[in-house]
Length: 157
Image (cartoon, rainbow, N blue to C red):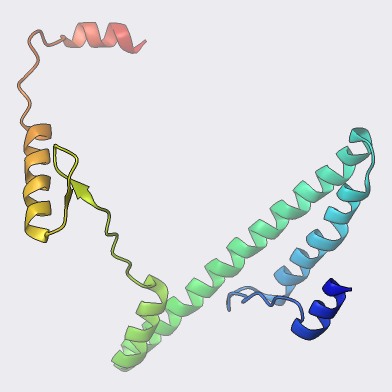
């Protein structure tokens, strides 16, 4: 009762599709979801699940390839549009296409800790710690008994 009322009032959750996915690919996705998964779930034994599972795997692989192709075509079309915009001197359109291709920049703010494990909050302290870390890492003394190339060849085989 509750679920039917909720689905009537709220409706099903709508997923936002990428604008580069073709209708053919979406149809393949629906086929995988409904038919192939249903056949796997309705099978009672492992032997009966084997064939639908193989069909599902093949169809899923085809869907993934179709999505890759759609995305490659979309990017190729955007690149052509960018070339046309550049040739025409339309910098606004060129900039918009470049932003669409590059995506949004997300700065990763991971906390950096000093040697004692305390979190460094200021940019200056973080830069000092990075410098300290890289100096320790890169300024190592040379090995005491370096291996010769003859010994290295012996171990690489």
